[in-house]
Amino acid sequence: MPAGLTLTSAGVLSGTPTTTSGSPFRFTIVATDKSNSHLTGSRAYTLTVDPAITLSPTTLPVATVGDAVDDKLTAKGGSGADYAFALASGSSLPSGLKLSSSGVITGKPTRSGKFTFTIVVTDGTGATVRQAYSLTVDG
Image (cartoon, rainbow, N blue to C red; front, side):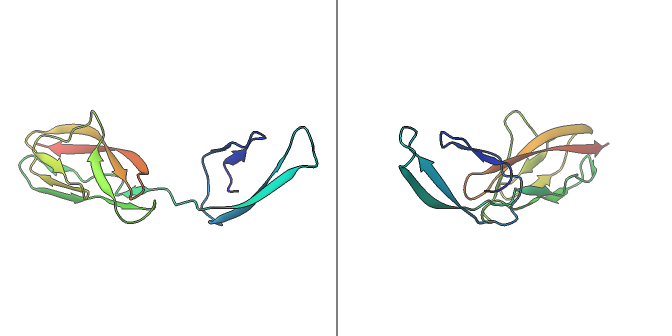
């Protein structure tokens, strides 16, 4: 099994894998009857650990009020190349800007300041990652 996962004597596999090296992982689980230690069963399993989703860039360039913004975010890892970008609940971009589902921030900011927001990316299997961003808009 990959590092970070454990299997309890009750048969519960839990934890968070800390590596993808060696994936797919192949292992066999053996179960023994508590009341009769001569009764056992086993089954082989294969577990594939997808690499974590990462976003880039990690910082956004400074924008200027009234100037066009066209910043592309990209995702890597996870399962597949089908990524959907969205603002996390409660987050908002500076007025005048919008985020497309393909990860492009476009528009013209209408006021200066430092704005923080969180972007959520979902891969093709439903796995998600959240990343906080800060965007400075100069006047």
